[in-house]
Image 1 (cartoon, rainbow, N blue to C red):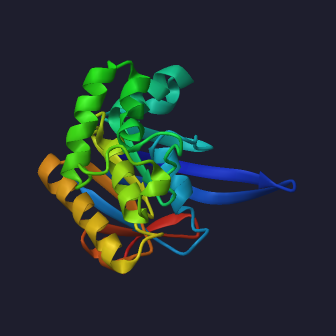
Image 2: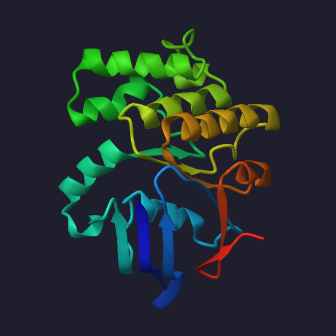
Length: 223
């Protein structure tokens, strides 16, 4: 489903080239759950942004469902991203002026879905993650765990094939983080969503079907 071929990413800083990712080759089959570990600055977030087509590689290829997505213009890539990939970040990026239901609806509304259909889909998802009594609460009225559940519902509203999560439990206490872990693991098992998680949480990583490590810009089997 996801395939990297000799993928590299280089940044320029003060006139110097910094190689963040170096010739990566990786295959992630459909329905797999993959944990990506590594020290801060190893390139994990850079890689997950490239997997989500939010950033471009300097060299190499990313194929999703056999399609070379970086051959497309930005408009086509944005449509593909909206329909195929869901994102969950450590900082949930909820819009503070909108309530939980409205935040969850955003990707569907951006896609052109009717307000009624978007609300119906979002309502079901928020109920599924245990927020049926918090629909009209704005982010500032929700706990950290509740905010992350809204972010999960938002990520799922377009029924994506791929879910990318960057430190999804990083800002949460242990008990709340465990509940978010359970939701992610269950989504992978029941919906067969391809799940890629960047995490420092070894307990979460151990619940994934495969683990890799990023070191010095290269991929290694996690030990």
